[in-house]
Image 1 (cartoon, rainbow, N blue to C red):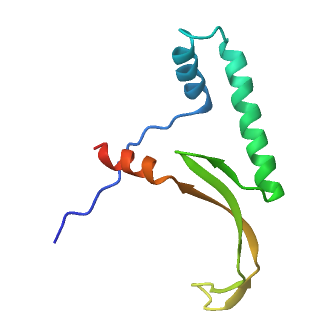
Image 2: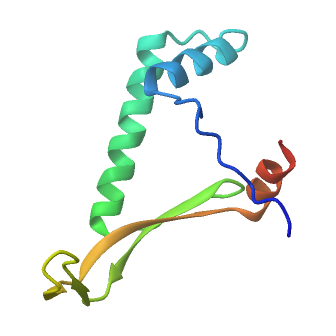
Length: 110
């Protein structure tokens, strides 16, 4: 039996501030953008992404990922404590699909 891949329980969290710092460090050699300008661009990007998904639009970032929403069908679930069945109504949920190239790059990194 093969060893299962264990998830890293101490995975690092990259916040918007850390991402801003990284982008600022990478761009400092090429462009003269301040950290505040970069944070504003990131905030606006995230806001527009949210608005697009709420409208039902699909976002594609070739070579990275695509974001869209789909309708999750009505389903029947059971309360495990009372054993009572209940109907969960249909709802729209976000979906993300990563590019094959990105999946391969991630798989190579150990």
